[in-house]
Length: 552
Image (cartoon, rainbow, N blue to C red; front, side, top):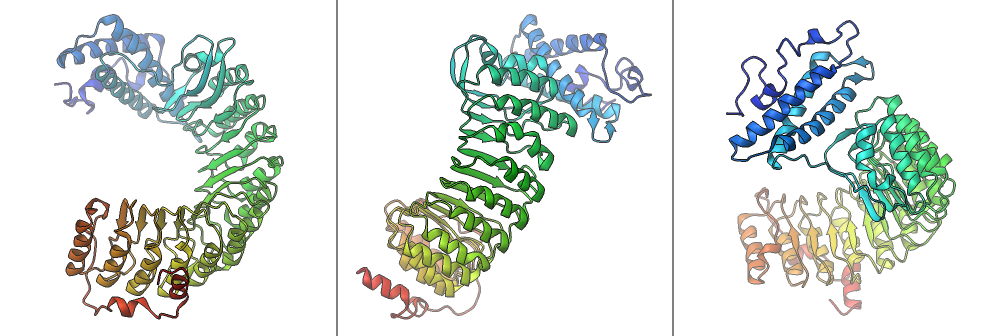
C-alpha cells in the first residue's frame, strides 16, 4: 500500500519513494556541507522529476485511475518547481542557514503532499491564481489559495493577464503568495502595466517566510509600483511590518491623495509604527475606512492614529481592536473621530480603555447620527462607563443595527441603561452581552427593552449568572419577535426546571431552532427571586420610558 511507512526513513511511502532521504544519491554527502547551503544539482532534480512522474502514474493506477505519462510529467515539473522554491526559501533563517537534512526533508514532504494532491485532481496540477495570457478587462486578479513561494518564472505565469499589453484590472489580491525580490519585480511590472485602471490593491500576507531584508525589499518594489496607480483601497494586513515595514511601504501610502480605505491588521503596528503611519499618511481627507487589529499600539500608538483620524472628516468605518489601547488612547481616538459626523461602524473591542474613556465615547456617539454598528466588547467599561455610553445611545443613534457590550462587568445596576439604549431602535438586529454579571435582576430588566426591538435576530446573553427567572423572562420577551434566529443563554446557572421551561417556550412558538445550545449551564442551589421582584420598581427610568412610549 502507498500509505505504509518506509522502514529506513520513516516517511509515508509516497514521500519516501519520491525522494529517499537515506539513499546514497540524495544524502547530505551530496551537498556542500562545509558551507551548509542546501542545493540540488541539475541531475538530482532531473532524477526527482522521473521519480515524481512514475509515482503519480503508479498511485493513480492503484486508485483505479489512468494518468498518461505526458500529463504526469507536466504536473511533476510544476510541483517539483514549487517544492524546490519553498525549500530554497526555508533553507535560510534570520541567523544563517537551516540544517541541510532538515531542508531536504521538508522538500521531500512537500513533494509527497503535492503528488497526492495531483492524483486527487486526476493527474493534473491546479495552479491557483493562474490567469490567461491574453489582454483584456478583468475585475479582479486573485492569487489567494495555497501558500506558495513565488519565483520570477512562476510570478510571470500567474500574472500573465496583467503583463499582457492592453490589460486592464480593477483589483488585485496577492495574499498567501510569498514574494522575494525577483518575484516582486515581476509583480511591479504587472502593476505598472494596469496602473491606469487599478483602484484596489490587497497585498496582505505577501512576504511570509522571507528573511527580513528580502521581505522589506519586496515590499518596497511592489509599493513603488503601486504609487503609479490611483488607489481607492490599500490592504497591507498580515505582513510582519513593524516600523521598518511601514516605511518600506511609504511610496504606496504617500502617493495616494484620494485613498478611501487602509487596512493595517496584524502587522506589528507598534508605537513607532503608528508614528510612521501618522507621518506618511498626511493626505487622509478622503479616508472612509481605517482598520487596525491585533497590534501592540498602546496608548501612544493610538494617539498617533488619532491624529490621522483628526484629518479624516469622512471616516465611516474605524477599527482598532486588540491593540492594547488604554484610557488615554481611547480618549484620543474618540476625540479624533469627532472631526466628522459620518461614522457608521466603530470597533475598539478588546482594549482596556475602562470607564475613564466613557465620557469621550458618549460625546462621540452623540455626534454620529448614522452610527449602525458599535463594538465595545471587552473594554472594561464597567457599570459607570456602560451607563454613560448607553445614555448617549438612548438619546440618539436611531440607525443602530449592532450593539456589542460583552465582557464589561455589567451588573443589574447597569442593566437599565442597556435596556433604555435598545428602545426605539427599529433596525437593531444584534445584541451581544456575553460574560457580564447581569444575574436574574439584570436579565429581567433588559428583557423589557428587548421585547420592543422588532428587528432582533441575534441575542447573546451567555455567561451572565442568570437563573431560571431571568432565562424565562428573556425567552418570553424575544420568542415572539418575527426575525429571531438565535437566542444564546448557555453558560448560565439555569436549573433543570428552568431549562425545560425555556425549551417549552420556544417549542410552543415553533422556534426551537432559534434557541442556542444549553449544555454548559451550571445549576446552583441558591434561592431564586420571582420575576416581579427581579424586575424592580415601577418608577425606575426604564419603567417610565416604557410608560411614556405606551409600552408599560
